[in-house]
Amino acid sequence: MSPGSAAGAPRVPVEERLFSLVLALLATDTGLTKNEILSTVQGYRQRYDHGGSNANLERQFERDKDDIRDLGVPLETVESPAESGNQNSRYRIPRGSYELPSDITFSAEETAILGLAAMVWREGSLSTESRRALVKLRALGGTSDEPVLGYAPSLRVRDSAFEPLRTALDKHQVVRFAYLKPGELESRVRTVIPLALVQHQGRWHLAAEETGTGAQRTFLLRRIVGQVAATGEIVEPRADDESTRALRELEEVWSSHTAVVEVELESDAATRLLKRRGTVTAPSGALELHYSDLNIIADELASFGPEVLVLSPVELRDAVRSRLSLTAHDHREHTSD
Image 1: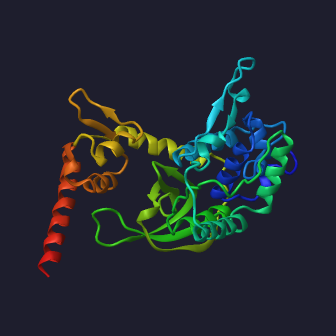
Image 2 (image 1 turned 90 degrees about the vertical axis):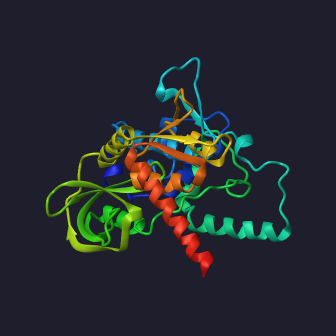
Image 3 (image 1 turned 45 degrees about the horizontal axis):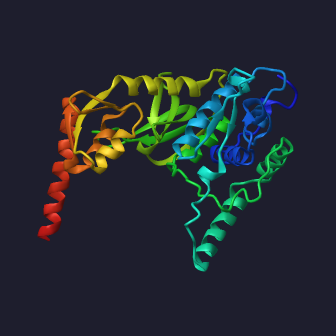
């Protein structure tokens, strides 16, 4: 490991790294290579090893590309006819596809509100390091007149457990929290060693090791209830790439579960479900959907009401039916008051 490289580098918040990456790719017309991005952009450059292996950092960049595209940002890959290979590919975000449409205008009051919001974002999320990274990228040939105002950002809302868990990961702390599994009436307290925070299918998960059994578990952050508390115990950092392992396992679970549903043509359900990753239309016209958590997909399908009919599996059909029955019961109770 070269001096000043990843070993003692401070962890940069995910949202700041992604925002810096978007700014960088907006600031260039010709695109940036992976090496240029990893060595200059805030969130990557702190862990970049000049002359060494950056395999983990490259995997992080690949995941970040998917996250940016999931946010609706039109990230393009530009291949050079003269230079083949993944390392020579260039990445950019075309301004015309990301800027606000020319026919959208704002009143003076709306502009003031947007200006205040941009100021908060600029001063709160975009640090001095991000500005320095943008200056370095300009030296590579990119220009950017207004990197913040004039663009429509999309933000993901995180679970309240995210920040304390990320802090515990940074400090290698053992934590304790109450976890409520589907079907259980009371939560159970879990004491775990956090290994990685990963996002899969739009939801945050914690990969962790239980202190009592040594078993590795994956916890959905939305099911953590109450506060995440550090126990005061510190553990040695792990050398393995726990994020990759956790994402691989989540992907295996997602791939192994398939639901078959009928949807009403040209309905909101049809539009949304057809956009889900991995959705396949069967010869019968039914949709085949992958899922990793039965209760989450049951909530989603039930929200479409009569626009969706679950054909299989039976346990998913029953779960959706119970939710619809409960909704109908609550509605009757409300109207009778």
